[in-house]
Image (cartoon, rainbow, N blue to C red; front, side, top):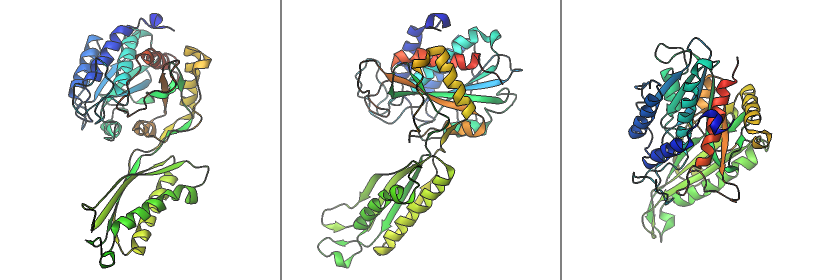
Length: 395
């Protein structure tokens, strides 16, 4: 199935992706982006549904006979607070914001799929909900949409969703390739803050104070031992300290030192264990150094866990539609996170990856890099996959 078979206007979708790229907006502030999405849906004769509770920039569309089973397709629409350095002609016009995770590409792909599905609406075996979701980058937009009932049977949002699919551009995969796996494909994204409270003093007289910097530094090293010493070696986990803040002068021991980090795990049991262990290690290091501890744990996104049958279905469709060489099973989960996890907690489905790295290029700019730009050549692959997942779906 080529772009011609789909009657797909790649030139239009590329221009649309570039326009979206130029107006990146952060979570729940995607008003220009939402306006462009709704205008395109209206052009396709798909009535945009907006005003979704607690997510004003979210947009939903319904295609097909609502008496049939329902499948949902999702794209995330928000950007990141990064200064763009791609030097492309269509670079960000919004200072300090950038589409560094490819959500402009995801949105263009779903709009392209919507156009194809609308043209063949009468032939579809299912009803399709298309979800343009805000605030994936830490804002939990998916959870707000789930709580608003977009997957449920409601008068406004149509029939209950029986299966949900989403995709993500992946620079680590060759252009045109699709990859996924059964079970966990992405990790939970929990974070923590630990403030060690000591007693400040002159740096020349450390015995008169209680040094929170030394204490926090010891805690950082202790936390690096958790995964290797307390986790099952066959169970992936990551603990990373991303910030360390303390002091204002070279000759002053401050009152406090604060570290912040993230913990990545793939199961509910591991999430509980890692939270308990990080807190325990910080508490004991603080006590050993005569400091007190202020500790905060913040639950992030749960692991993104693909339904086995849905993952097998995506693999089969990829092989049938793209050719067997263009499907690569994911060897294991990645330790990044995604709020698509909330949809998968509600209904069966699959999150899959599409390759972005052009042939002959050894390495592409990674996600969240200030030099990342979604590869337009991947748009067709994404559209073909979403359309085919709908066309071939059966209960």
